[in-house]
Length: 204
Image 1 (cartoon, rainbow, N blue to C red):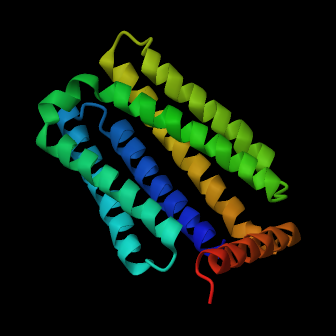
Image 2 (cartoon, rainbow, N blue to C red):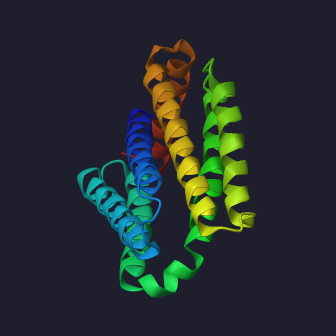
């Protein structure tokens, strides 16, 4: 449980930094070309992939978490490499990729808020509301109701900034988890179940 929460904290922190940084760049430099955005986005995906793969190598004892890091790391690394090598192909549907990304991450955040509710966190409802709005923003980007590309660019940038705020709030909630008495009980039950499962699979 502790390793899982630690991994979620790191993921939330990286996602917040990346989303806010990219959103600021797109707002400060609205004339930036689609190719430049593709290169930045591809590099970010590569970085996230490398971080997860390295974390897999360093935490092989945490089997399920480590395996998840390896799979997602390889996916991000592959997508980043594809984006960098096939910029001309990706640029045609770049905004749709952003919209899909924002919407899916919003749905994941909704699930995270429900997990926080089960863990007894008092502020889960705030994350839930923020995540619903984040999902709605992603859907708007996917539908792309804007006639001008510049307007779409600014809206995507604002959506990325907002997603970064959602990630920061998620991080705050995760940091407060150890102070919650109910989390300790859940953690103990999960560890106990894990130990019992290990004994049943590998009896000594």
